Length: 251
Image (tube, rainbow, N blue to C red; front, side, top):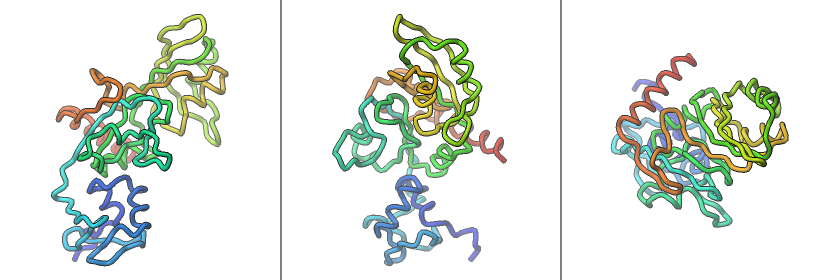
């Protein structure tokens, strides 16, 4: 048997749509995964997808029978980007039909951020899109308090210290303003935790509203807040083509 037929268990689970690799690690640690009738808690184990019998929470897994699913949701404000919440707050999965709740969300939007979030059971795609080195463009509409000066916006655009690192250059475009607030379009290719909020806090113009309107080739056109839809074949191809291009740039 050739070595390249073997695959790490958590990677195999992710490929079959049981969550991100981190979520699959948790399922293994909780003793929910069995291989050939034995409970597995060893994170380093590799399996042969062609011959090993794998089950998760009592359900047999067969990668070849798993249909790839791609969904976008227009996430509302006040909704958690998680599968379950101990405090029983609303989550993004409450907005999906039950038969799609086994797919995983790609990345996350914080509680008070709204907009586009992607779900898929395509483990390879999800893994690449969430890698730190991935540079898929994300576009946001941002409402901030006050009217930042051109000097402040230029400072953010060039990159500023945030934690132990300096943010990558971003594109900030003025949209409109009132006497008390301003709207900007922000394009960036990294996604540090609460990055946009933290950046505008540094220049003392806190974010009042934040909405992601696009992720790579995907956008929210004709999708109301709280609604979801399946990607069409053209969108799926565009997304996969972009990932292939990004991978070639990294190598």
